[in-house]
Length: 345
Image (tube, rainbow, N blue to C red; front, side, top):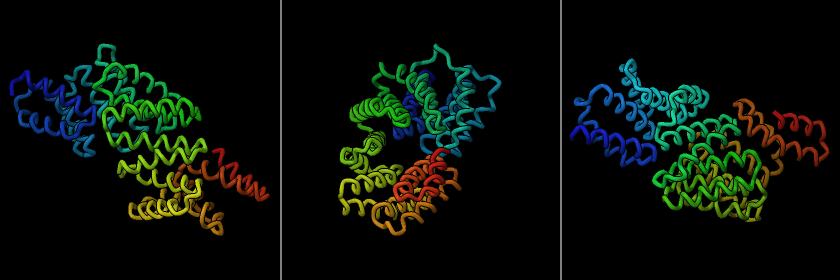
């Protein structure tokens, strides 16, 4: 492979990684890896930084980190762009590992090297990842700001529709968290339309899940079922438990008890098989809400205690609010006050 082809292959590799095209990225990696002995120092650093990103999308974080260790051997001669790529790659690893505070620290370092001369795709990708990190840190306003900046960089670049769809999805999730349901619906349907154009099943399933969540939140379970069933049909294991939970809840709310029990049973068993204690409690509490009212109070109290122990503030607030309302309706005001206070944490 000629030297000019190396540069071209590195560019194509970068795009494949950005667009999460794992097979294309693997093919380019195998070709580039044959020639590493011929690279000068600057090209080798670029290769290693992209190699870290490549291993990250393959979810091989040990190798991803090892690539950065090798790249740092040359850090005295890094270009400004390579300094950005290093910190951004570190942030990506922490993001995938769900260490969001560490990811944010790395992204703040990377942002010092973001310049208007960078390609819009790179600038947009940076703002997208930062928006997602802020979302998972529950800093919704800043997440929305960075998502909007990402859209500005992606919207005129059709080949980047995958990244645009991810950004539109994050925007919808932010507005859903802010209870701005009209804007949430608008952005989620935009994401859905973009997903269908690029035929990305993973992103399509996630968007359908969030539309289902939107309509459940708005008290429209019959509408939610349509999107949740589409999400389940996408066969994406990483979101399957969430889909089954919302489906069971929506089926029960629309008096489809047989379907509800099927979705509950499948979800509860999968939560046991996956050793997912959080979802096990969510399914158990859902079942007591609709089918086993005799044990409703004790199981919900135990479930809320568990969520407190693992510092799951979202579920503490969510379930405490509903349990408090139950105690208010049954005129057990002391218990109602206890759970209303928990709902405010």
